[in-house]
Length: 176
Image (cartoon, rainbow, N blue to C red; front, top):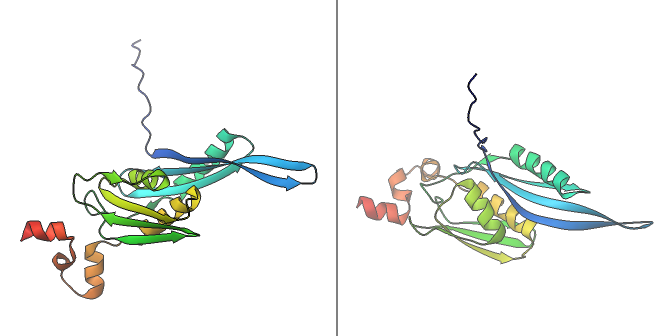
C-alpha cells in the first residue's frame, strides 16, 4: 500500500479579517461583553462579499462572519486589472472614492478599503477614504461603490454609443 503525500487544501476564497471589536450591552447586572468581527471574502477574480458576526468568543464570531461573507458574495465589474470608471460609495458618515489606475500602479488604499479591493482581485486602483474612519462603515461604503460599477459596454448600450468611445483614456490612447 502506497502512502499519498500530504496535500494542503487550497482555499477557494481569500478571507481577510478586517476588524475585531469588543462591544458591550448594558444590562441590569452591569455590562455584557461580546466580540464583533468583520470579514471580507473574495475569489480575487471579480467576486467579493462582506460579513459581520457577533458572539461571546472571537472564533465563534469569525465563523458567523465568514458564513455571512460567503453568502453575500457579489460580482463586480472589472476592466482588466482595474475598475471601469471613477465612483463614490457612501455608508453612514463614511465616503470612499475609487479611481481607476493604469497598469503597474498597484493598490493605493488603506485599511478596510484595501482588504475589499484586494479580495475582489483589483490590482491597480487609487482610493481616498473621506468622512468617518469607522472601519465597518468604510468597508460597507467600498462595497457600495463597487456595486455601482458598470462596464463600458453596459454604459455604451444604455447610451446608444459605441463601446470604444467610452473606454478609459489609457485604452483610447493605445488604440489611436
